[in-house]
Length: 227
Image 1 (spheres, rainbow, N blue to C red):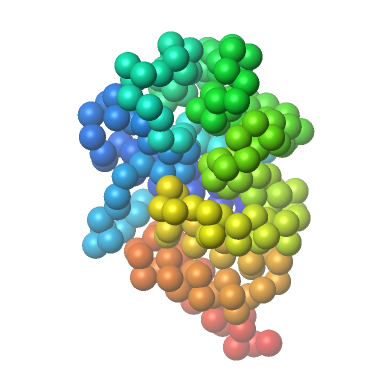
Image 2 (image 1 turned 120 degrees about the horizontal axis):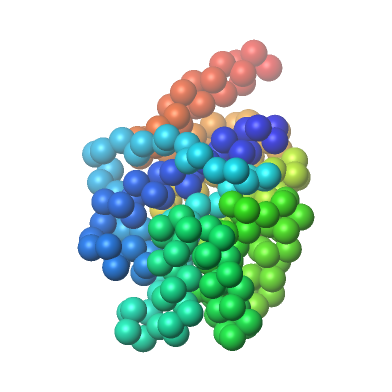
C-alpha cells in the first residue's frame, strides 16, 4: 500500500506539472496552485509520467502551489520562494521558504512552498510536521489538506485520507482539478476497502481521460465480480 500511495502521489504531481507547463507565460506559473494550474482540455489525455525525486516519503510537487497575488504585490521572499520551487532549486527554496514563513507566519503561500520543499528533501516525520504547521497557520488551504491526505495514505491510514478527501470535495471550489481529486480519492477508498465507491471514481476519472484510471476501473470491476 505504501508503494501505491507513493506512485499515486507521483502521478498526481506530474500531471500538475504538465498542466502548469501548458498555461500562460513563465511568470503565470507562480500564480498557480499546488495541485492546480489552469484548465485541462477534456478531449486530451492527461499524461502521468512520474517525477524523479529523492524524497523519503510520498513527494509533493513544486507545482502544487496556491494561487498567489500578482508578482508586484508579493513580498519579495514569497516571490523568491515561489520561483525557486518552480525551478526545483530545492535547497535554496527551502531556505527561502523558511525565511518567508518566519517573516510571514500566517502566509499560505510561504507555508505551501515550504511543504513542497520538505516533501522533496525531508523525512516522513518532517513532511507531516510541515503540513500540520501549514494547516495550523492557514486552515483553509486545500493544497495542504491534500498533502496531508497523501501523508496519511503513505502511512497506510486510508480511512483518515478518505475523510480528508470528503472535506476537500466540499471545500475545493475548483482550486484542485476534479479528475485529479477523483483519482486521489479513489485510491484512498480502495485502500480503505471501499472498492465499489472507488470504482465509481475511477470510472469518472477514466471519462475525463485521466491516464491509468480506465485500467484501474477495469481491474476493480474484476475484483468486485470475484467477490
